[in-house]
Length: 126
Image (cartoon, rainbow, N blue to C red; front, side, top):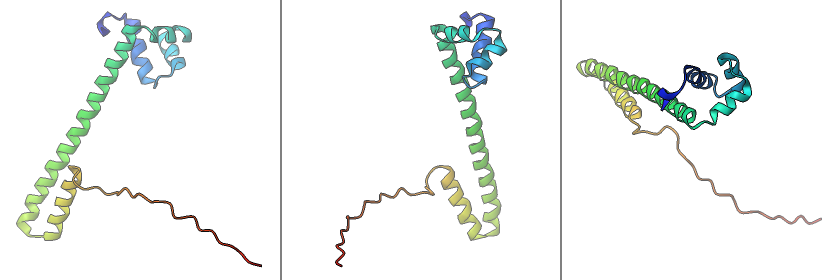
């Protein structure tokens, strides 16, 4: 659907996303007046292009995050091999703990449910 857009409409989609959804800035960058920007944003083909653009960005961010997690995991495994040969148990335990946290096995924060205390009524005698 995005290929049915004119070059100016494609520029509108890119500018709108780059400006965080600010119509005024988008209008200045693309040559549309502000009313035209909002009118165009209501068109179904532009709505679809915005969703596709957002999905592409989400996928790129996800890929970068996964690469970072995978590379950290690999580095930790390399370190663990070096540490295993030196028999330093405290470092081995710490590496295993960090790998577990990276995999989401350990949670640093705990959710605590606090119930309200009973209301205490006190009579003051004079």
